[in-house]
Amino acid sequence: MKLFDVYPLHDITPVKGSGSKLWDDKGQEYLDLYGGHAVISIGHSHPHYIKRIEKQLQEIGFYSNAVKIPQQEELATLLGAVSGYQDYQLFLSNSGAEANENALKMASFFNGRKKLIVMEGAFHGRTSLAVAATDNPSLSAPINTVDFIQFIPLNDRKALKAAMNETVCAVLIEGIQGVAGVNVPDAEFLQCARALCDKHGAVLIVDEVQSGHGRSGRFFAHQHAEIQADIITLAKGMGNGFPVAGTLFSPKFEAKYGLLGTTFGGNYLACAASLAVLEVIQAEGLIDHAAEMGEYLRSQLALIPGVVEVRGAGLMLGIKLPFMVASVRKALLMEHFIFTGSASDVHTIRLLPALNVKKSDLDRFLSALKSTLQISQAQ
Ligand code: PLP
Image (cartoon, rainbow, N blue to C red; front, side, top):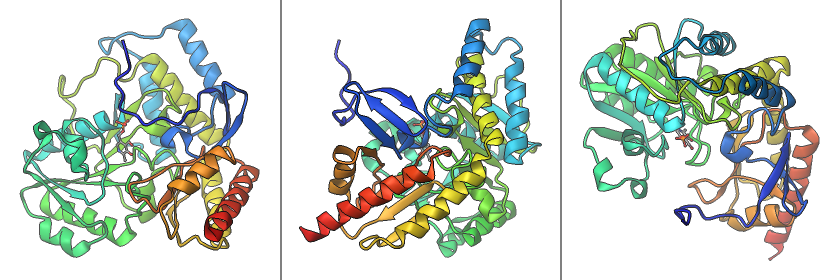
């Protein structure tokens, strides 16, 4: 059997990781500022993470959600404490798309409506409703097409006001748009969305799949705007590579047996991985560190000729160049051995490093970027 060939691959085979470093099968070391797409939150192969998963595996690896799994309660309690959402309820699943499907389904169960308002440039996943709410028609098959989703420009309060009425089920927005190229919703827009959802009985869902778990310098990116969402979704950084996702529901959502369900969601190993991530975030002060490193990067990037704009917060940054970034990213990877991310905005390099990335690693990137840009500008 062959693999279903859907990924354009780098010709690199990582075989080992530690912190923000990777090594390939030829022994070449790489600096990972992409974090496997915002997934590596506490660094590759963190010792506490390995120990916690290993210990769990020695005891029990899996049983179904038909039995008591105390690790789920432990995770809900710790996630509530670290995120500041103590009174919310956690439903565990396996991927960001699934977390969003559950969020949208519960919003619709809650108010009985189905119109959705979503942002232009949004990416919410590849399952049926999540992909319909994603602003990229090439990802949607005819079977995914629905007529109840309205896209509006991000940060356009007038468009949001015009779209809102008593038929709106939910407003769905990324804490920070990732795939689009790191676009930050401004505080006034999020506050306006909060107020309009309250006024019209709609549900405010914030997708923190990429921007959550401390990446923005707050636990959730929307917390910079001092608002609370009704439903929050999380995944990527939650398990540092172990597949796990969560949907957080405010107390107004009432659980009923059978309303949601999953085979693998909330299994022992996923809980152990997620607990290890939160424990390390707390013990090592990684949210403050992410904020500090983000500020440092921004201040240094501002000094580099050729950098047009830096968008984002904490360690979720988009670096805009005056030309398409593909050749710069290729030079960073093949000549300086540094992984960075792309975006649908072809002028933007995306940085999503581990939250405990070292300042010396960022300096290595800054000098590599400087010399790569000098060469590109000379050509
Ligand atoms: N939501 C956002 C904001 C994302 O960036 C992604 C993935 O990139 C998803 C949802 C989908 O997550 P998954 O690939 O785990 O289904």
